[in-house]
Amino acid sequence: MAKPLTITVAGAGALGLATALALADTGARVTVFDPAGEAQNASGVAAGMLAPAFEAALDPAAAPHFDLLLAARDLWPALEAQLGIVLDRSGAVAVGETAFLARAHAGLRKAGLHPAELSRGTLESLAPGLDTSWAAGLLTREDWRLEAAEALAALRRAASAAGVEFRDVPAAGFEGADRLVIATGAAHGLAVVAPELAHLAPIKGHILRIESQAPYEGVVVRGEGAYVTPSTGGFTVGATMQPGVADPQVVEAEAAPLKAAGAKLFPALAKAPHQAFAGVRAATPDGLPMVGRGRHPGVLLAVGARRNGWLLAPLVARVIAACVTEGEAGPFAQRLDPARFG
Ligand SMILES: Cc1cc2nc3c(=O)[nH]c(=O)nc-3n(C[C@H](O)[C@H](O)[C@H](O)COP(=O)(O)OP(=O)(O)OC[C@H]3O[C@@H](n4cnc5c(N)ncnc54)[C@H](O)[C@@H]3O)c2cc1C
Image (cartoon, rainbow, N blue to C red):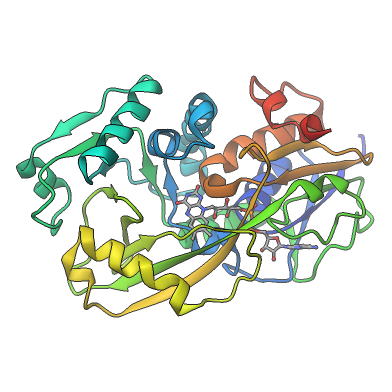
């Protein structure tokens, strides 16, 4: 019998863990290195939206890639079953001033979607507690959601059960393995074996968790300057975008605008105590991750998922597994190829 391939995965965020699990499922012997332990990365603080529709509609960097984002989302039900988690498929609504709603509507239509136009009454039932001044909204059921911390823990459990081993130290290179998968988020520490990491720029983001006696059980609400999602025991309000900032420390002054923007949507948030978290996203020049073979033999990259790491994780894992097994990487591999930046 052939000796199984040995693979080092550097990074235990959503991309590293989903990839490690997929690689273990191919029969490889996988070891994940990460000095940060559990839930201390961008993946752990994220809102967990799996949102191809509103990301394509509202984020110019995502707009050309609705097909890819939707394909990634459609890989989630299989992973959901494998992890034993439950995705929230109740959808998302946009509320805001006329110009914002017109932009959201045009973006959704451009993606080929037909959002439902909501009256105040329907809005109230989908998003209980929404400020009464918002009289109209747009609903799409294409956007789903997960609890990020729970999903991260479930990925780790599933990877362990599939035989993946974990080391709570940084990877300095291949660590003796046949292949190295770099899933180190915004970090550049492995640039010596992956010069492509120079294309990554950090985008710091703050997010607020707000506990509430009556936890929010409505749909995700997208407004101008903030979104609000349910979270265990309350609300999540996200997220700031600070391009060029790589420091993951929480700075209350940087998080403060979120509280105000969240309270414009749900007035009850204004006085509720909050806890701020921060994470650093990694972004490439075209907004899509670098996924696939690196320039250095044996190196694979799974980095640069920007605002959509959770959404993209199963697609990233599938492409990397295909690269390792020389299998069919699917229609999006070329768009994600790390070599596209030269
Ligand atoms: C506030 C906020 C809200 C977000 N909301 C969403 C959302 O709703 N939906 C969505 O899809 N995405 C969201 N994102 C984006 C998403 O979180 C990221 O795209 C995703 O987490 C990236 O995952 P990753 O595995 O690439 O990186 P990370 O989660 O950053 O993990 C990288 C890991 O690599 C480790 N590492 C670094 N160097 C080394 C080394 N040399 N060796 C070993 N390990 C190393 C780090 O310790 C870290 O644990 C959000 C991000 C932020 C900041």
